[in-house]
Amino acid sequence: MSNSAGTPGDITRRQLLRRIGMSALIVGPGAGLLSACATGGAAPAASTSAAPSAGGAISAANPFGVAADAPLEVVIFKGGLGDSYATEVHEPLYKKAFAQAQVKHVATQQIAQTLQPRFAGGDVPDVIANSGTDLMDNGALQQEGQLLELTELWDAPSIDDPSKKVRDLVAPGTVESGLINGKPYLMNYVFSAYGLWYDSALFEKNGWTPPKTFEEFKAFAEKAKAAGITPFAYAGKNAAYYAYWMILISAAKIEGNQILLDVDNLVDGVWQRDAMKQSAAAWAEIAKYMDKSFEGLIHTEVQLRQNQGKVALYPSGSWLENEQKEQTPEGFKYALSPTPSVTAADKMPFEAIRAAAGEAYIVPAKAKNPKGGLEYLRIMLSKEGARGFTEKSGNITVVTGAADGLELSPGNASLSAAQTAAGQNIVTFSSFENWYKEFETELRKQTNALMFGRISADEFCEKMQKAADKTKADSSITKQNRTV
Image: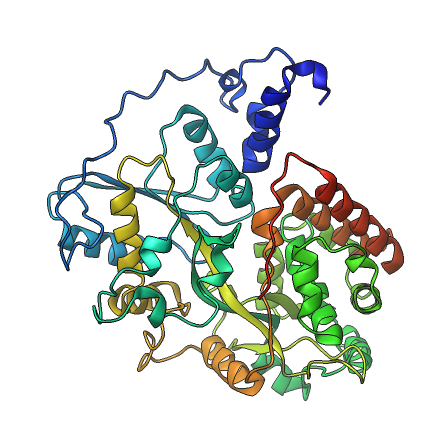
């Protein structure tokens, strides 16, 4: 978009809105911002909803001072986790605490598309599960002053033990995973592990074991191919990030976690380091066993093929089992394997897995009931709220001990065993996905180009370095920094 389209301030705001996921609202010079909504209708009238609630009395049971009768609106991404955890656990718990409050529930798989007109018009909900392919750019939201800082939440007394702060009862790294500009704006809730998922019953039937090195991976791929099974696959249409997660995990295993911190921090030359090139080359070799038609598939289509015994190893996170529960046939047993070692000199062992807090929940700074939003998150972080989430979603939360005593599914049992085997060998999370949305979109594009054979590993690394350099040079983007 040229600078002739408006004033520099206008351009900056347009760039921000684009990164938030509001590109549908930006159609070119002279266009009214809201008139370009996907509906094609006229711009909506200004919000006539009530002003923010005045708040209630602060007490031990109500540390944020939530107004007892203030309405609360919750928007949930209804993907692999479903939304029954919200409608049947968290929202009823909130209603139990604030019986006079009306709780409005909105479920969608199109977060940005659903919320972009509302953010533009100043009519935002109180809690958002900002996730999925159509998520909003949290970094841009924070830069625009649209996110409420969550220090107050983490420092509040926990529901289970008021003598302890909420931050003291969650898994290590949880608070840090939600930092933007050094302050917590995201409440990452699901404790996930990432790696290669497979049907342990199928592997046992064929006498296969998950490969521990890429040499073993290629040998396994030949066996699977001979049996009429695609050795490895992912969905290029909407889930290229499943594949780039594997590339980044392998790079971290080769060099150590510092490389992932350097990716987040846009360190010069990080994408052209040997570890990144070796990792990209290793995964591109395995991808040669994947039919090119997979680039046109979405994740559920590939996952269904795995349930049908047509795909052996699938890169994903530990939500996979629950996401596929309706399509998983009798006798199929999900299991997790770490990514194979790339070289004999890898800094991290084969057993190392990426495990991190994920699935970001946010409270808009301009919500009508932000105090209620904070309390809703505090309820989510109680043992009752977290245990109920695990029962409904099949996923473990960051709340320490909340799942103790629950009967675990094959996938979660495998996850637990993998975490035990990994010990302290944990591949760190990545923050650029929340910080730099346009860069992340480019990474998806180049990952597909690499994995479907259009570019080499060296070209992939060169293109991603250029994208990182472009992001670093863009003065309209607030740069982030992480040290842990």
